[in-house]
Image 1 (cartoon, rainbow, N blue to C red):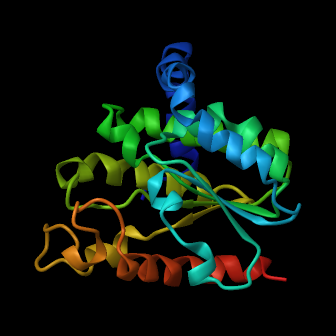
Image 2: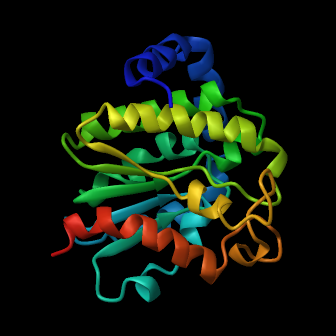
Image 3: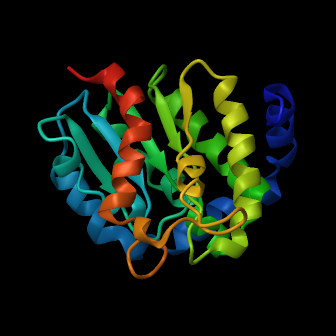
Length: 228
């Protein structure tokens, strides 16, 4: 694992105007793609103090009420989104909810669109900084980028981003890292192979009910800190 201080320096070195432009620019151009979803979020604001899940389709497709019946968990995932999209829509998706805590899964699609590990880590740091500035002290849990069968060739780069983000979270009093990758990889048939197919839908990318059950087991200890 990277040393936290070195990881922080790594991110700051990458966080230049050119990187900022590459990560933030596409979201503005894609805004119409998610306008309907964002408008629906705005039309149904959750009670303040909810636990907000946001991110890409791995969050959008997760039936939180089925996995945590009766809990104040709110789903604000919008499929296909990247970390820059989470930053771009922050004021419309996260800030108005005034959540007790935030759970974020994103970064998977960033790699699929050609981003490198440095850009993904820098974008995570930008989202986390935005949350701290807008809602100081709000706990943030980042769900590690998953090893999927469909994007297995990208996994070494994704794993590098996970290590750097984990180090940043370790150095922060309010950011935490949920390692769902290690237990997923433990299901592989042999070392160096992708996780078991039963954790995914037929596309080899999105999570099955079994996969989400695995994720729940990893997240549960952290979420229990905020249950009413």
